[in-house]
Image (cartoon, rainbow, N blue to C red; front, side, top):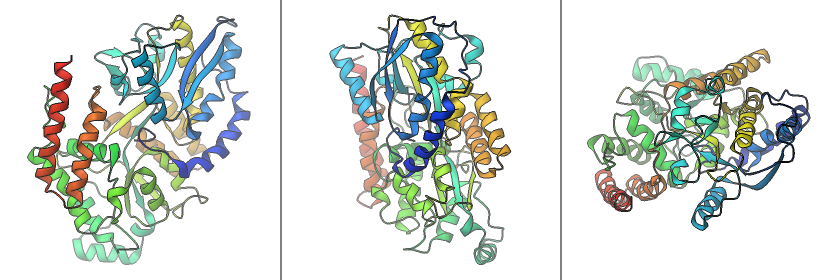
Length: 450
């Protein structure tokens, strides 16, 4: 998912331009959180934040909170997800937690036992503004350990140049007896992926072929097909017949040449650049690519991109691999009420609107609605629709990986076996059985050490 295990380098230029304009805007936007003037005067709040161009616009609002409360913010660390993850684990190992607030993520929070339960720190009317499922996904073992900042969930981008081509429309109707339209289920998705492919210049679809990107993409379709990764006792069950069928989908598309030959080495930026170059018809991807795909400075498809909810899998469910960037408070924080004020400010309606204007999906329902209205008012039909589609997907289709500390280990055990099946080194059944043995060992070790 977006910037969980990837970067969006191709988007950086466009975001920088918007972020610069927001620097001026930040000084006049209302603060969004009512606090007495100078309530925390003299206090310095130490924080660790995720860094990267796509996150910086929000941080331009921090001086507003400082002016409002009298407190000062010391940013102890501002690093990429990879670097911040390593740093948090080093902090835990050394038992050196000298900060109050840290960026977090719902898919990785279970690895960090340093964060406190936030229930009781935030008013009910504030929490009521968030999508309920996102708050539930922000829990670890029943404890609300983070407040969601923004959310990622999959949806389907499609290339209107390919779909609106009269020759393609006529050929599709002749071959399949129906009008050419974005697929509503994975049977149609597969059919269209093969129909559109004109290798080596144009492909029906694509998928990531390594790292957590591949694990999550497989997991998402597995769930949509009616399968599970782990059962209620945390035993691996992804090597079921449904799991084999799911992996076969990737294997067969690759074998049939309906995806680029380089797919086994692809991560998110590769997918984004291919689709923006007009080389692919169907692209399952994240909301962060919406503005990039529709910007003539970065995309050949600007003005010719559509986005719809993901097609239904064989289990009559949509893929919805999801997760939220978030903020947490450490158990060692000496002034949790100050930390809570800071987080409430950064996740206020006005703060989330700053990020929504960049194409990020807000975790607050009011910001989701108002972002769509704002794009409508600007006659930006594509972004208005994209916000609406991804917001609906976040409410109705989203699910996270298992919120357990072993998720990274599971992913690292699974994706190399998936990749071996895709390139033909193993059958799908062999690959999944081998991965299941490794995951079983991981979970047994966790149980033994619990």
